[in-house]
Length: 115
Figure 1 (tube, rainbow, N blue to C red):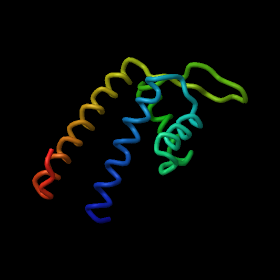
Figure 2: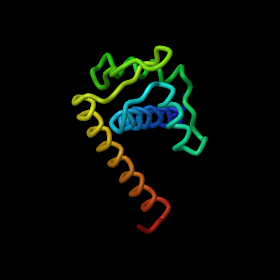
Figure 3: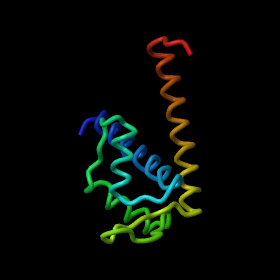
């Protein structure tokens, strides 16, 4: 695996965690809703697979970041963010903002892009 692949995969999961928790902070969602939100907000450019989203939801539940709220039709499970999840979300948003500022600095220095 090249450095670029490692770097890209890190940011892929960093954004997945941040955006996923942010979605659950806005409203109760099921896994399918999360996939559709990713797809809609990326204008169809990013549609994470159920094999990525559903295990991630289970991890967030096991870590206490989200909790099941109710079961919808046909046994769909809906989740919302917990107070612990809000703390983690705020941390992740801080990391993301820092990373974006670092990229802005990098672009300015390397490519002489004016701010």
